Image (cartoon, rainbow, N blue to C red):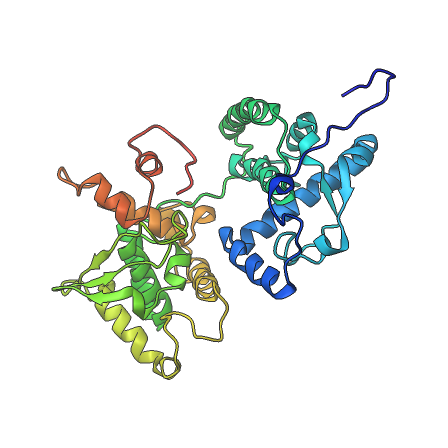
Length: 380
């Protein structure tokens, strides 16, 4: 705020540690490292890296377009902060950060409006743009600085306007959309048939598991023996965690049954064949079914997506357009298609909460995705 003689006075923020006994004590390096490792589980590193990259982009844009603001609204990181790869990005080179407690919201809104176009002239989707706002909130928490009081109010109005702008762009065919089309049951069976016919047991078993669990591809990547138990006439599968439930407190058991009438989509047969052909890998002390102990998390999902893409671009190239848009065909469509199949094609579908529970969906998003509410572009 301005002083009586025209000088700028910066309001000092009192640290909460000032009233805590020993609040200024520096932890031992070993203890501090263990603490940071535990706190690092609050957010996945991939998401944290994404936020860091977005903050870097915003700072670079401000430096070029508004150098005056850059000199007062951006601060250089300390050597300790630059070396903190957990909080400041594992594979990024962040050297500066925003001053969040005096952030000019207008700068962020201007950046988002200027950066809404891709190099091909189309606009980014709403979810892509929303993550810049999320990155600001992450940065403020990381810096332990409160955002200005007007931040949420102004950004809420801006995001509503942005959402309407994206709707207009979609109508004009100018929106870059990456959402997957739901894979219908008929297409699902054809995927299994062609994978099995070509001897690709991995893709066959992975697809059947994903369909039966209504799962994201990454959930099947971590599919393991401890997640399985034997029911009366079923295999019971329960995740350790999910995207919406990182602690695993609300995951739902899924009873998966054999299909003796159609072996091509029988989960028990597919899993049995995959375990048989990967017997050498199973000899190790690994628990995961679709990746071995030496593979990184996500390697099974990456392999599956690559194999599925090769299948779509190969023997299924001429068939695929009969069912879905080829440029909207990916593994997430299996999850969507299973949900749609379970809630349609019959006058007496299963209860909606049970279907939502099986797919680990929140009820609101699930209802919108199955067409029961007129919402487009919902990413489930």
